[in-house]
Image 1 (cartoon, one colour):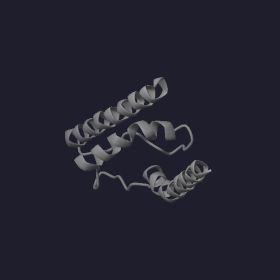
Image 2 (cartoon, helix red, strand yellow):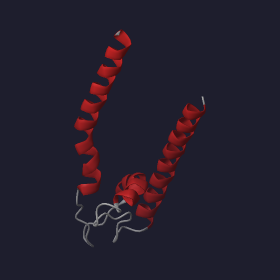
Image 3 (cartoon, helix red, strand yellow):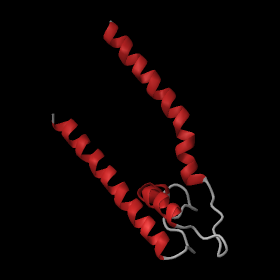
Length: 106
């Protein structure tokens, strides 16, 4: 009986966390950036958008005005940041996939 209570508590905690965190996650896709020639995104925005690129690609299926790559941008600084972000995002994705595969095999 105690095992059922702990599972129930874990599910409740997970639901509460998802409910609290979900609005912050969606803000990454819903938030509009004022990108113009006078205010182009730089290196740090490139890193951030690179980290979100795989998720933004999926979000494009459901939200029409989501873009993966910002234009106009400052040039090679933004491109370098975007590349670093995408590479960082891919490692996290591969790590999660490997952990998931190992968890299913074991």
